[in-house]
Image 1 (cartoon, one colour):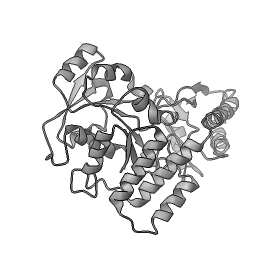
Image 2 (tube, helix red, strand yellow):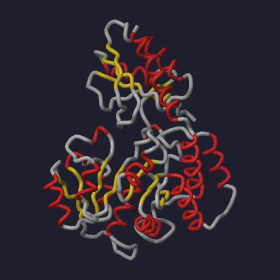
Image 3 (tube, helix red, strand yellow):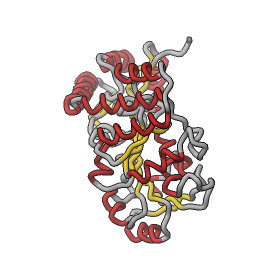
Image 4 (cartoon, one colour):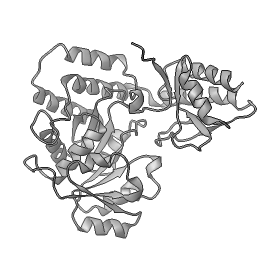
Length: 346
């Protein structure tokens, strides 16, 4: 095979494969692959275990976070007997419109935009939409009301939080739902949780999760094509168990040491500027090393075409900057990234 592996100093991007699965996840998936099971029964059992682990009423595994949006919106619209597409409304802040709108609109729902105004949100809620869809992350905060205010104003309309990349912190697993009162929260299974890339996780109220399961494969409903296999079910369960067992403060401290390594070596270099960017591009509680370079694209291309192939970030930085993210690196790869940069910047 001619495909070259990538050292990922960018982020938990789907285009790069999300994240790397730790051994317990791989082992759980391999074990699942060796047996036939009653899949609907396993679906429920894994959900119950995930709910208990994450301090939520209920949980279900989906075929990615985008699939979770479709299933949750469909569940807010109605029972699985409902025909799709339908005429329903999903309220979103105009500033949070993004490429994942399609996951909601595939149900037939119309996106109703509001601004960062309680009055606008109240007017939209008065029309009794199917739900409010709110995106977590620092890059979605401008132009939107805080989630606490959205939940307060919702008045019985379900509030759904997309927090696909909001781990760390691991407390996000219960913060939006159990602590704040959102009806459901969605995570990518293949980002900070380091589970199978083709998984997502919905946590929240039992009535909503029950509907998600009934809308999902193997049922002949809107989610039939969004299939989750036994390998993904057990793999994501193992990933959540593994994540909860980690020492998160030590993990975050390790990220900061990588950023310190880069800054100590790059700040003295003439012709470039290196500084600490905090939080991460998704608002996670760790730094990135931001590098300003007069010919950014040449540097990006040289890293990508080099040996080893290295991907760096461009999201959330200026047009002449790149970002080095420690979250997706294996031990020792921070030094490999630094050595490659030093060869290029002199």
